[in-house]
Length: 81
Image (cartoon, rainbow, N blue to C red):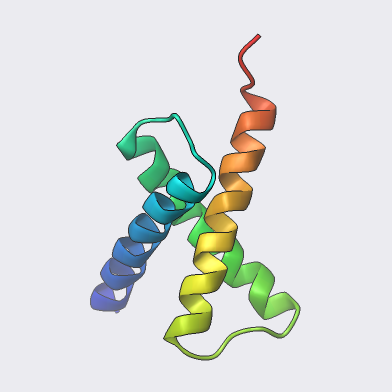
């Protein structure tokens, strides 16, 4: 159980890094990792709601998409004026 959580966090962090690169985020590395972990959970949850899933590749794609979505929402909420 602990091993699965650790792997999910590491994959979420890597997907957060990838999402930060895709979204050209100017945030810190740590912030992108945290947003990626949250985005990975969000992407997996949304994917299961619409029937997507199954396999590592789909999980990584959903995690990167979730990270991009969370970074986008972060920008909307905390937009610099």
